[in-house]
Amino acid sequence: MDQVVTCPDTCQWDEEEVVLDFVTAFRDSVFEEYHVFPTQLATLDTQSWPHSWSKQDPFWLSAFLDDEPLSVHLLKTNRHIDFLNRFTEFCTTHGYHPYKYDVVEMVGEFLARSRRRLDAPNGRVQQQEDSSDGPSSCRMMDRDNDKMCASSVDVDSGDDHDDDDEEEEEEEERGYLGNDDYDQSFRDYLAADFKEFCIVHHAAERERCFLRSGEDARNETDEVIAQQLYDYARSEMAQGDYDVDEGFRAHLIDFDLAGIDGQRFSLRMFMLDATVPADETGWFAKVYDRQTDALIAIADGARAGGPFADHWTEVRLVQESECIVAKRYKPHGDVPTMLKFSGRLELDQDRPFACSHPPPPPPPQQADRSSSSSSSSSSSSSFSSAAHHRDPFLTCWAPEAADGCDLSSMKAEDIQALRKLHEASLSHGYLSYAGASELERLIPVAASLSRIHTGNHVDFDACVITCRLRPCLLRDTTRLRRRLLQCIFKGSRWEHLPEDLIMRILSFLPQRHIYRGKHSKP
Image: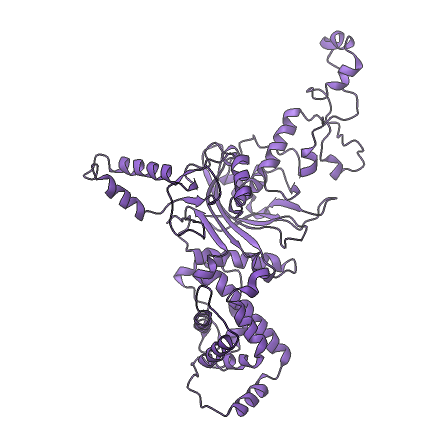
């Protein structure tokens, strides 16, 4: 099933809306030039949540736990209805007004979902997978240590307990809690787990930060993909001592690489933008074989492999995957792989990449012609095929080479090819490659697809121009789909169906569009 992504402010499509149709938008684009064929793009962006969290409904649970820390006792004894009653009273007392939905009902749904994850005999989290949760390999977090579930004493509701006097109940709560450090940890965990529930599982909240477009490659729901992105971001950020509460922007990119033999290598990339907006890191990614889930490559935005540690990303194939890559992807040979480093500043400089060494002597048959040339003209022929050329990145790897010359030849077309590849790649500053694999160079190209989901129509328009994409009106896409449907019906009993009935059939079919932005112009 394909997905339709609409602007959050609009409920229905307008025929004049500008969209990207994943069937036609990438023809003759930069992606196709580098043999990358996008299939699906999904984005989970919570970077604005840390700043606006206190203004949203989910904040009220955190505030309630801070204001009434003893309330966690009710959860530990599985008195969830009592907990909800207290929470309702807290919201009413503090003048809570629902924004889109009743947060009390949402907390109730959250608690019910958490209780369903209990295993009655041992109080631990159930390990069986629900069929709607996607492949188990996508669940990166171990739920055995779920504090909320593990701390429950009994899976029965316990909501029909005997009522004590308010004083006795509070005294009982204080005596039960005991460990203040653990209770604070439990409250923090409960608030964080509720936030994950809102982002991933609550449809109305998820709409605020989740965007999906293109073809559904593996028959997955939005909730399944959102969970995969959240788990990946949490796992990746934990390695850098960051927390998902700080906000993140994660992407899922399904794409195919077309080899020179015409075979498609289907890949899935989980990608994380800069860990924290103010942090000077590159981007991170893990690329999997979409058929076998084998890990193929890694992009490490924290690897300071050169003199410029900020905004640095290293791309490398996983050693175990080299045989898979050799079998599944046959390189074209038109992607420059002569350098292992690509720097933004070096490529942006408009200067001849010529070293200070004199060019080598010309062949004998050209000696007479060369002797009549002036020394200035000789030095100006810095882009001749025989001359040495400055490797613009060599000084990063060999600082002892003052002028950056490795005594090899680099032609003008080589520099131009490197510049084009860098512009097509996602780079916050510098890219490095572990080897000479063509596939390593194409991963940043595929990662640049994430720029489509910027949320800013100005950035999106720039991406359309830079990547040579083909936006179109929804009306034009509908006409194309209608013609395709008529071709399918040709020669059958449905060949002469009325136009309005064909349009009705199309309205039930999934669409492959993303919304460009309501302020953009065709």
